[in-house]
Structure formats: structure tokens, C-alpha cells
Length: 287
Image 1 (tube, one colour):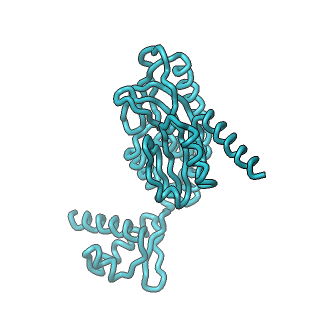
Image 2 (cartoon, rainbow, N blue to C red):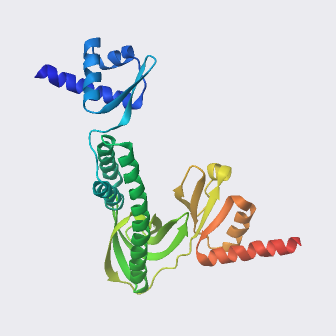
Image 3 (spheres, rainbow, N blue to C red):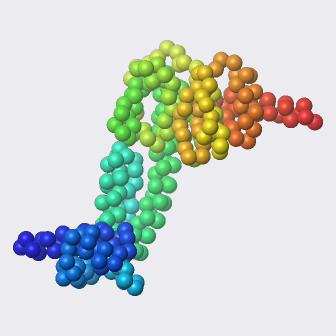
């Protein structure tokens, strides 16, 4: 029994190896610390359960897909639904684990089942994404207009007690801008990360959202040095999102104007309008 278990374990290890790499018999045996007879037994075992083991010259590799299980359209739809639920309800690490488990189940079916599930997942995600956004934004806006402080929970499980300030849209994402009541600092998070919204207490007066949010691109984003009253809100490989809390907007706008096409003001809407007027005025002066 132990010998059979060792053979089974070696077959599983070999499959994981060949899914990632093309290797010779010698390389496989050395990596798995097995002898040639065990190698052939493992190859046969993998083929018997439906995995395609390809051989090109001296090199072996395994296809991700096996025809051992045929999924019906309803089962593909259930997989797609579970993937969307993981996106919207689970913290990032658990989301990855769930997705990994589902894709492993799909890999022991056909490539067609995998592609069908992926297509259904994308369509369902798009539909849910838009509707969940709409509901969350309406709810947050309702509490903001009613002057309520809120407790929100994000995917990671972290909770914020906050005062809502505003929203802004950028690159198909909606960001929620708020005052963290515990540390008295303004923050911003994508609405998609919010999983729970609970009203706390009514507040007399909402603080003004005075910060200017702007985005820098390309080389400037990589070499930019934060100025006084500035902080990074979000960073990407090719751009940087920055919040500036300066009181003198005109000085800030004149500096941002020098960055030309490498800079864009995102928030507030009032700042965007003022900046556009300043650009237009500069163009009129050139004429």
C-alpha cells in the first residue's frame, strides 16, 4: 500500500512539474528523486486518468486540460458565479485560494469548459460590477446627504469609522473619499473594496473636501518628489495619484500646469473647472 501511495505522490508531483516545464526523463528523475521504472509508471498513471502527456524530441510536458470530467453548461455557470462571489465577498488572499481551487477543477475537464466558464465569469462580473457600484454609491450618497458618519468594512476585514466627503471616477473605477475619524486624516479607497456599510451617528456639519487630487504619468511619476502637504493615494507602474492639501490653489495649479500632458487633475470637480479655465486663459494669451 505504501509503495502505491509513493507512486501516486510521484505522479502528482510529476504532473505539477510538467504543467510548468518541458523536461527530459533524466531531469524529471533527478528532480523527483525517482528511478526510470517509476518514471514510466507515473507517465502511464497520468495518461490512464486522462491527462495528455506530450513528448517533443527528448522533452516531456503536460497539457493543463484533461477530458476526465465533462461539465454541463449549468456547472460552468455555477463556477462563474462562485468566481464573482469570491471577487466581491472575500479578502484578497482567500479570493486567490478559491479561484485557484476552481481553476484546478476546470483543468481536469476540457479546454472548452474552461473557456466557457471564463467567458461567463467575465459577463457576470461586468453585470454585477455595474450594479454593485450603483447600489453602493447610492447608499453612501444617501448617508452623506443625511449627514451620517459611517462604519465601513473592506475586503481585507479592516473597518473604518468615517465621515463621508465625496466620490471621483477614474479609469473605470469609483473612489470613495472620506475622513478617517480615528486618526483625523483624509483617505480614499475604491468603492469595489467596500463590503459593508453601517450608519453610525448624525453629524452637524460635514468637513470640506479641500484636497486636490491629481495624477502624474510616465517618467514624471517615477521621479516625482512629494511637496509639502502632499501624500500618495495610489501608485501604479506608469502613474501616481497624489493628494495635495495646500491652501493656495493658484500656486499649485501653476506648478501642475508646467507638467503639461504628464499631469491631470481628478478631484474636486471645482478644482478641475478652475484648472481648465487656467489652461484656456494661458492658450488665449499665446494667441
